[in-house]
Length: 110
Image 1 (cartoon, rainbow, N blue to C red):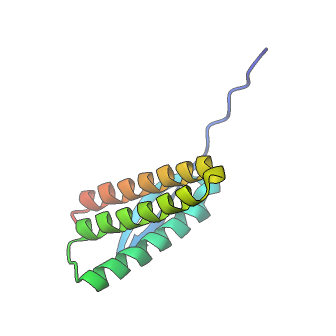
Image 2: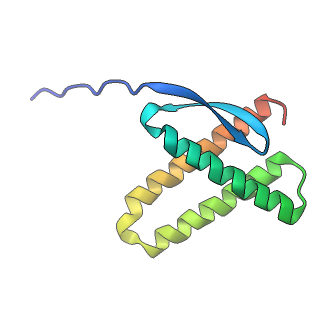
């Protein structure tokens, strides 16, 4: 039995804006729209937290947004055991994107 190797996924570098800062993020071409939507959701959540809590530090706002989004995903997960693998994948993906944004922010001197 021969197993064909999967071709490498082509990555594309796209620009996203979160809290008025621009980040360059590489992602598979087929996930571009999902990444843009994730960035929009993250930006919305971070603005909401910053404005409601009068937080100034972008790191603190990012951590609070990540915790809130992770909490939302975990609640969805507990409500639907049938969707567990999908939610785990989405949670890991979101966490990776948040981690990448935080690293990029530190590289840019936030």
